[in-house]
Figure 1 (cartoon, rainbow, N blue to C red):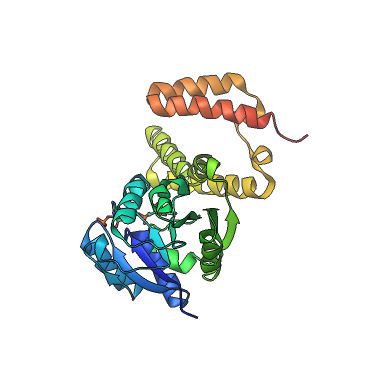
Figure 2: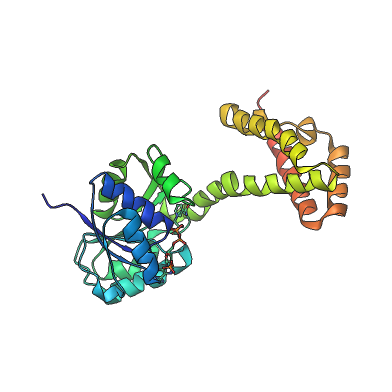
Amino acid sequence: MAKTRINFVGCGRVARSLGRLWYRADVLEIGDLYSRSNASAHAAAAFIGAGRATERLSEMAPADLWMIATPDSAIAEAASAVAEAVPLRDGDGVFHCSGACSSALLAPARAKGASTASAHPVLSFAVPESACRDFAGSHVGIEGDAPATPLLDRIFRAIGARCFAIDADHKMLYHAGSVFASNFTVVLLDVALQCYRAAGIDRQTAGALMRPLVEAAIGNALAVGPATALSGPAARGDVALVAEQGQAVRAWAEDPGIAYEILSRLAIDLAGRRPN
Ligand SMILES: NC(=O)c1ccc[n+]([C@@H]2O[C@H](COP(=O)([O-])OP(=O)(O)OC[C@H]3O[C@@H](n4cnc5c(N)ncnc54)[C@H](OP(=O)(O)O)[C@@H]3O)[C@@H](O)[C@H]2O)c1
């Protein structure tokens, strides 16, 4: 049976990583690669080890599957450009990998007869070599039309993913979960380091103070749930100290002060949900 052929539009970190994984696992035939800059398309072909970099969308040969791997804000525009410039056939799959946006962004391709979907790998692709190494066992949230969705399920499972269905209508909130869990945890660690520094603690000592606290907080929250893992003044119901500390943080820096106040409210609410 002929192998499913995939073309890429947008040749950054996700396209390169997934392209290499599918190529090396012999899951897909790597077809044509197009990106805003031709240099990215060539770099992607080199990283994947296969594929033909094209200078224009209109030069791309037909493919069973089209991956639109531009930044989220460019997906709709890229989908229009693909629908306009390439020979989509009825049932060809067109998908993107955004966690926040739904496959509805691909409406122009759908109007041309394509089967549209999205597949969101819940993994950081910041360093493609690491993403390729760590991909197996990661989760991929899929939504959209058949036959694209069962095809995506098959090709992601073939490189070790655990696929699950997501509701297209709730993707912004679904993705916000990852933003809170991952991105904002990093932001909070940075604010913590700034607090330590403003209190005269050197960077090395601050790191050493923080490490066991961070590791225990995350480990416990994952093991027994956030309500049971919560500690600190809000968890103890020490409202007076929370107010005083909030004022001290705000006097030092406005935005961390506002964050302290809102996070304390959330912490008091969380403490109220602790099982007895
Ligand atoms: N990075 C992650 O950790 C991660 C994780 C899960 C899902 N995702 C999703 O995966 C998708 C791609 O993310 P990424 O991290 O691979 O982004 P990226 O590394 O920034 O790559 C995006 C690529 O698209 C090209 N591009 C931009 N506008 C374009 C257009 N109109 N037409 C064609 N190509 C265009 C870029 O420009 P050049 O050609 O100039 O280089 C770049 O090569 C996004 O939907 C993102 O939400 C990312």
